[in-house]
Length: 74
Image (tube, rainbow, N blue to C red; front, side, top):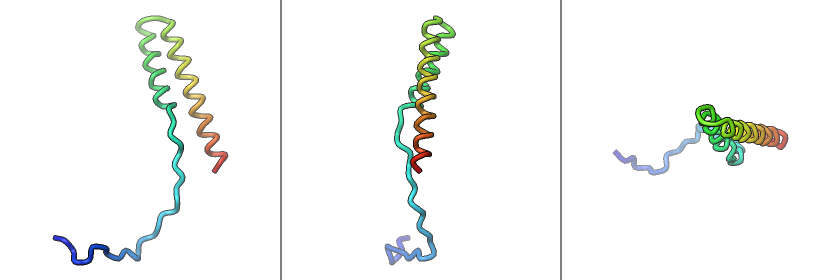
């Protein structure tokens, strides 16, 4: 059933305050790659294990730095 008035009045609704969204980042994907390499390295080779650990650690550090930088700006 379609109402007669297509734009009903919602005068009792409150507007939400403007919300600032965080910037997009590639760090979660990089951490996932690091974790995959880390676990793959456990099975195959210590070189892949070290690369995975390095990628995971660097991405985690960058993500934390981005979060801290955003909190300083707000």
